[in-house]
Image (cartoon, rainbow, N blue to C red):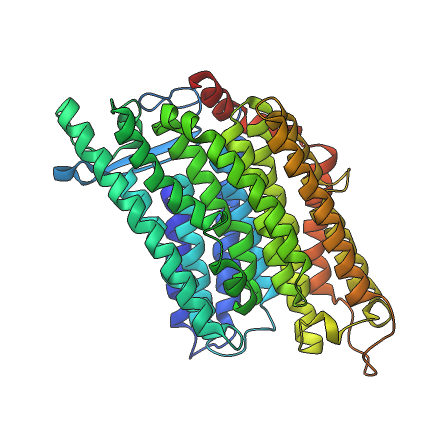
Length: 493
């Protein structure tokens, strides 16, 4: 029941936080921390089982650490099937970590309707955990859609000036992608039933479903587009900068650090194993789109004057490496893709926390109105430089390892695409250093002093600083944790 409790604790915690809003206004913050803390204890127990005996559900033995399967709607082959392997354990750990830090980052920012805010925060985190754990495709789609509503509410209620426009754009793009995925799920369900006589949504039963080549391609594209919208991949990215810019700080952290990772996870978990032949045939197109996204995202990031938009467009570029690694398909590339998902969540989440803290102090994100911030807040500026260096891929920090492994793996598949992606790293250096130069150096544009990092912010950012350094110096535990899943994929390929 440990996997089920991971989700239920957050759902119940969200309801409790909302119910206490009127009677004890600040209680919702502590309820959220307690709920996420309990989940952290459960995740720690799962890490303790990592080297123990594995469970072996269905057709993919040898990779599952824990599972639960309960009947839900047996008439239609729908079950409450949750399972966790190395990759989903890494992403579940990232979810709990960034969830706790998001509560801390929004401690003073959210002053209105705090109970309802924490209700939505915990429910979107529960939906994300469900996506990472679900092995029934109907249940997976349920959690996929469950993420949408609370994130939409976080944007339109607690966002900035154009929050309603950003929320609707986010809703329409992700809903359209989700509907395409639903059609593919139903298509796979009926085709499997016709060929075997068993109608089921269970992922392990659907693996190896005999499909005609053209049919498999169309079904794969339905899944792929839904995940490409979330990743986000050019040309499905226009929702991203608006949502990131207008969302509150916690919303931006969850969007960049976690929601985008559901796209990469979906490709790794569903697209590649369910449609191996169609994925291999589509790989040159996907890798080309990844390289375009890396370059195009870097160009757009360079053109921004809004700090939040710059970080948002940098995600388009950095997550292009995830797409590139996933479809390169060899062991090095897949290791890099998994590591890049984790490292991007840490580094970009930290940057959004810093931008949010800066906005609280000076009430602008426009770099044209900044300058000389290093003089006013040297500690905040130094920490921003640290995570900026991590984001652009400085050796010794985590992002470098992930991107380097992706490039090594992609080079074995396509030299031209690898060269184009490498140019994107140069672009990242240019826009990152331009940001530091314009916002933090030069003449001080603010006569009024403002507070530097406080103790709460130091704790939040200190955890992320240690994490990204550890991932850069000693990434092997992450690689080893994901290894059984990657070995299965490469063996199937």
